[in-house]
Image (cartoon, rainbow over all chains, first blue to last red; front, top):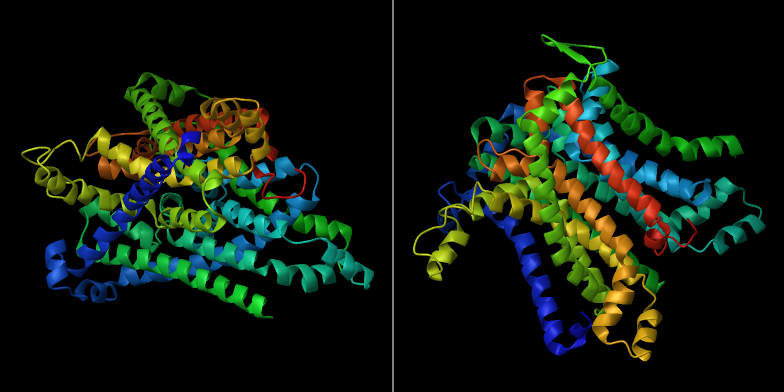
Length: 266
Length: 288
């Protein structure tokens, strides 16, 4: 593989990356086309209509699902980033760091169905009925490893010398954290919250097993597909989720870019 | 002002959260797998009936097929992800690497169920892939085995979990001290030998982490086999959900526990053999 430093090797490597990325991005296109005209992609390009998007708001169950999704995403964004911050600090400060980190990262290694099933059985046995609470719990569990890793990477760039300086000026640990470290690692916390919200919006398998009578947009799409199959309104919903996810990524990148510029000009 | 105890308690919160809402439920699932199903009710007992039912029936064939499919997907994922991670870690500029890694993150963020629905169109008889096949003269009529087949499931699983495998591989490869590779060149080893004797062994923690991610994902996946496998196509993930649909909790719990035990075994091997230091040590400056 060292032969990849040759021009030919390099070209084939970048071709591979290009082909793989194309295969990963291609599936984001069909829902957009089918949502614009149920007759198919060709018709969608000639006579696009937003009819199916408007139809979403006439479906009461669906409007409920939208609100459940939004509420869950806000809760998961706030809770996962807070717990992620605490977890990152725990990895830094507590003993047995490897075990602490392994426990936090555990949800990454448990298949979604198994996690959903175990949570469902657990809530059932402890008499907690399915609600926004149970949905938020499984989604926070799923988002926590990512939130923690993001905050950890940003924390690793923070120089502890600043904290020493704060202590020398008489700050206690809490003041030093709040006034010195928190502002410097806040991009990581915002990143963790954004990532957690995106993961929440896009979670199906775990949520579907603990939601009870509620629905999120994702689980609504999934259960409607299983009962009656795909329809233009489902494609419209999928398109909205894809666009929302992309928009959040772009917004976050733009914010990071501006912060960087502000920092450089300061 | 915060006391030492209060601070420790606060830091322990996420651990407590994971212990209560993940470890406890996983343990409870193992317990319930030994319970008995009486009519529509589940009563505490100690019976191996669910395991017997699982290991003796058709479901065990599903288990074996899942293992095979997951192994194939993981292997294929490595074949794609390793060269990509290698180029990004050792042959590309920092800026390019950042952009490409971000490009790999975005599809992972968009729900894979949605992406899988798209594959069911892309691979269908009248879909663009078949149109291209016919237009290029590779076949004179649309190919049937593209959809509702092992192939379709393979594509669905690969595109769902391969992006995830690039990251640990990149982390491991980027952390290799390049002087080691250069030293082996200086000592006269040909490039390929340097790769197999230095780079590959040093990247093994990342390889194993990628294997776990690929394997966990494709072994327990439930949506892809339903959407792309066609009627009756079962892997462990959707076999568990269909067991749940008939409200057989102990059996579902037994199947899920076997899956989780497989994963934890892999994780334990990784933890003992490689330790997180060699892998996450680069992004975390503190000693783990």
